[in-house]
Image (cartoon, rainbow, N blue to C red; front, side, top):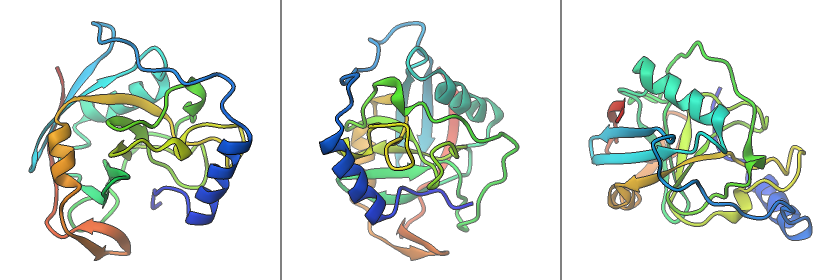
Amino acid sequence: MKQTLLPILVVLAAILSLVLFPNLKGNETMNETSADNPVVLLETTMGNITIELDMQNAPISSENFLAYVDDGYFVDTTFHRVIPNFMIQGGGITADMRDKPSKLPAIQNEANNGLTNDRGTLAMARTGDPHSATSQFFINHADNAFLNFTSESMQGWGYAVFGKVTDGMDVIDAMAKVATGDKGGHQNVPDETITITGASRQ
């Protein structure tokens, strides 16, 4: 199933919901770097990206991501959706724009963990179903407050942040500058394929 961010009307509803019903928990930041936070290296055809996961605040999403890393699943998948000043999405589509099969089930959305979609953070991509995330993730290229949790409703769940880029934002910035177009039923696809060539715990 194609995983993407919400259609524009739902996004606008989310923005309105954010204004009318602010997150009462308040914004939290990721834990300080510690031995308890797993670190993952993503190797790509445009450079390396180091990611720190937040195991305390986002255990479900972090364990899910690590399962795909340990299985070697991310290798030969692409960053198939690039929108500058918004986000870079990948983790489930191959260079021929096919979904890469996975045996892992969808996970519970934990966007109500207080973490926010700030520049450089990782969050789970999903369909319109709030609890449909599997392998695909995105890296926020800007502060995207309208993607944050506001309520446990279809429009309010938001997108679960579970990590942050600790090294390699220059690579993300370079990705955001690539030319894109339509391909294989997808929009905003890089004209030159950006492939994940390796993913490993550090």
